[in-house]
Image 1: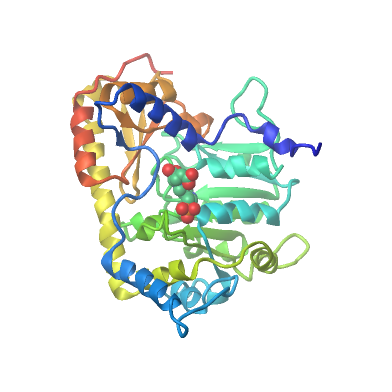
Image 2: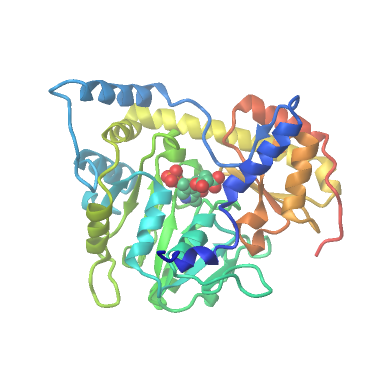
Length: 415
Ligand code: PGU
């Protein structure tokens, strides 16, 4: 029989979100009378906005006519959409040929691993979106679990803690590494400043590293001083790739549309341009994003679309404020709970001192019928934290806030 890819045996647990769904289903089966509220997975819930929905429907209708039909398009994406993204989101920072349209940021993160191969060292923020680590393990760029410790062999974890303001000490990064970095951050909700990202870019350049910058939540940045793209930082075009998505920007989690920016000025050690190999990956292993989704993406970036998407992000930011207020209540204060994030970001990151994340997760489910995400699922430094997502309906965020006001978190000695 054909052998199993050894890399899969290195994965220590299933993917985080299906595990949460499993626990939610088990709870639902034995508590049929309870209404469960999800503050768990970052999945959008509000309907598509009218202008964008009309563009999607219009494209689908046109495809049903001889004049409007089109088959495979350019693997890199529609020229008009690449141009629109460059002009609207990267004015003076990236050219349209450097924008590659895809079916989402998660898929691009997986494909990007192909550029570097299994020999590459990987550095991640700890905690981090699990795809960076699990994807590296599957690609063979990381080994098995570290004996007696949490985390994987071959991955450099850069702890992001309340002590360092959730910005890591970069001195631990090995030379010639691939660095995954996410801002606004999932799960901590921290947004890096220009000065912090300058430190990141400078460190990457000094050490011959490439940054995969995940800007999937950039639409939530309201503070004008905070950078929305790594390419606002001097020197980033020489050391970074950016992945981004319409998922959170326009509610396209189900529609599926994203993009990557790969600057022509980014090179491998042998001088070959990264952009050329990325083009090869996309033309060989991807057949272009859905033409319907791309029509929606174009509409999302025109004046009316931008107005709609801004109010969509504002809606979720308001949910974050509602839940944050509840988590700052006296009942949480008494247990020493501290809350981070929720400003310029759709995630709240709450620390329950002395508690295990999965225990707090189970208590919140049992006592409040609220599903959250346990911080330890994002990496060793996420232990004792819980992530609360703001991607629900307002009425649910308010009801969850009411239930949280009556929750009695356990208090335990800090560690
Ligand atoms: N990048 C980050 C940092 C994310 O948090 C997510 C979604 C994505 C990329 C995915 O973007 P797409 O363009 O939709 O592919 N994170 C959610 C959903 C969980 C998941 O498995 O993607 C979350 O709850 O963390």
